Image (cartoon, rainbow, N blue to C red; front, side, top):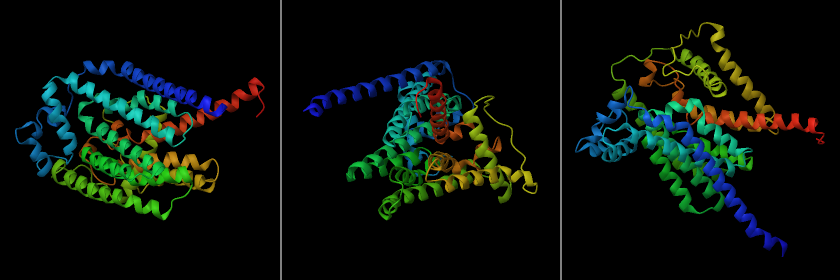
Length: 377
């Protein structure tokens, strides 16, 4: 009888806690990003928005069914078209929408972390909400593609985790559909099927044959999107321009440097700039390979101790690197004519580093506090 009498009360407490957490997230985002509402259009906002084909009378058709756009992101272009009806050339409305999308992404992230039983899920989410590296993605109208694709990416992952828990097929097909919308917003979230398998491994410590089979439609969407993204980048966005002519060894060495650069900016977000100086990478020099070798060493050590402390590190850093792969320089993007790295490139990936640092810091603080308070370990 006692269990029955307390169960409804516990349910109410959980709902109240969830509502309080959501209000805290929304409040901190509102306070942090109020200045962005006063910002205008910058750099390529005109070509992405005011001068976009999609705003012309037949723009929607040309964006979905022709190759006239520089990139095949028809969901993002459609979003701009719908917003233009509301805001015209007033940048305030577009900035407000960016902030709203970021808030929705943050709320989804929180619920996913809770579902994955990640410790200190709310603090992780709050750090992501106001992390300085994310400002470029949220406060720059042209980065609507980045945050919109992230919104559908997280929605798809949340739906899949719901399917995994309930085995209701409608959640599975909803997840597939949301993933299609994600890659049609921006193709850099193509790693979702790998992330799904990683989450399954995290929850059950194993990946079954059925899990792999279920991931196949996601891999198919990812493959098609990757081909489209590469074709549009090389044929339309870049065209005859020379973005970079590095050899494959130089690109591999540069990828290792980029990973550590992003980790550094995630942990110590200082001296953030719009365009970072381009690196000069000489693969013939032995020290150019130190970043790659360091990464291999970290993952090798974590794999050796995967039954204990290495498991969360593998999961967090694995997610981080998997989400970065499309923009590590193995393939050219137009922006790389200016810089090989950018803050907005790690909007989706940064969650892994934030989670690892927050959980690690929390556990370290707990160990330090216990002896000081006399509480037995």
